[in-house]
Image 1 (cartoon, rainbow, N blue to C red):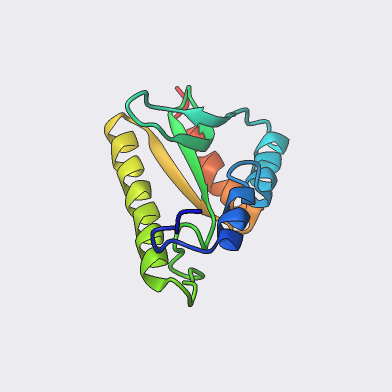
Image 2: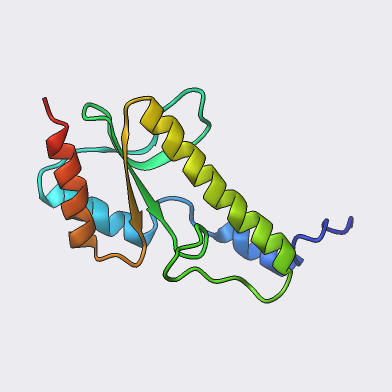
Length: 140
């Protein structure tokens, strides 16, 4: 078997493949709260054809995208942490995620979308309050 290029062990690679990329607990809690308030949305919505990325929650008519970010994977300023092994690889990986997030936000803003970022550590009710305010402010 070919050696991985400094990335990780086979065990770490296997754990990463099992990592959920959608329907995470924070996403589900926020969606449930938004739905309870009567707000209807799309999930895993591809907003821009030129951008091969999807938003966790989207309100297409109002042009509001909600990005629910995990503290580890998106390098949360409050709770982000870095593994002790393979520090160079992980730094590069996590910095790439942060750069991709910023690029997505810039492109969506240029296309007329509001992006609401919700961190996994946030209270789902408070996060839904923020999302609801933005959505209602953009209704015609």
